[in-house]
Image (spheres, rainbow, N blue to C red):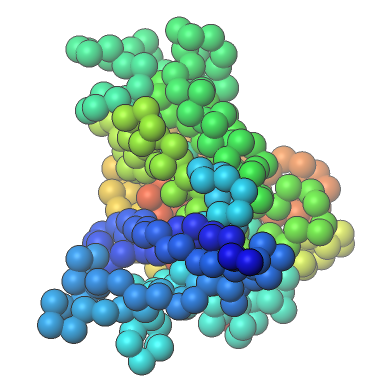
Length: 350
């Protein structure tokens, strides 16, 4: 009997600077549905000279599958496959930021039982104009658009809802979405969502965020819309776009020791503030100005329930005395692998 054919979309990060971009290509793999696991997806190769990762004279690089998900764009029996980029000898390519996070998790990240959650903001564009903006001039000042409802203030909800459904079908740890402060701007969240059977560790959630980014861009293709992760999509008196990151260790989540661990994390984060800023996204200086719910880029600040700080301690965490912190510094185009790496290095002293 002929084996069924599975369509696997291999995803990886290219070598573009200052911001790596997603690439993907399609492989058809015969096999029984019940036999699908990570080993089902073979190592593959690609032309690194076309992705800013190799020279043309010796351009083959390797794609090593590291996680896979049901593909909601193609339907049952087909998959999205997240990959690391390897050199021909099997070592991690210099652009492979996931490998550095993986090594750090093995070094001690697993031992501290780190959990992470990403709040991904993005802006929808129709041509060169954010969705819902007039052809000339500006919309009404920001204020009525955040968490809004109604066709005069909410623009792109159909795409955001389609993306939510796709993330659920793919099995991603998505736990919310909302319209953002600027018209045409949306946010979705990936990470811990209260289900203790789901392990929301930095490696798992970073993989899933990249897959979720691929999905919103793929969904937008259908309508000729662009999903932008630019840190400051519109100049002037408009909020930028961020990737607020929620982080905790087991100690921080423990009643009795939690707040002391969080306060110690503040001291460690302040020492390495600029190390974080270096990898928290291209164009970050346009966003971290001290206005629009940000702290100035060259200052480290923290506070309880204060969205104008580098780090916010949520009010319920302060009241309970344990929980997590929110790093408000990363920009929307930041690499989650690098965010996780720096948080582990600073907070856990790895």
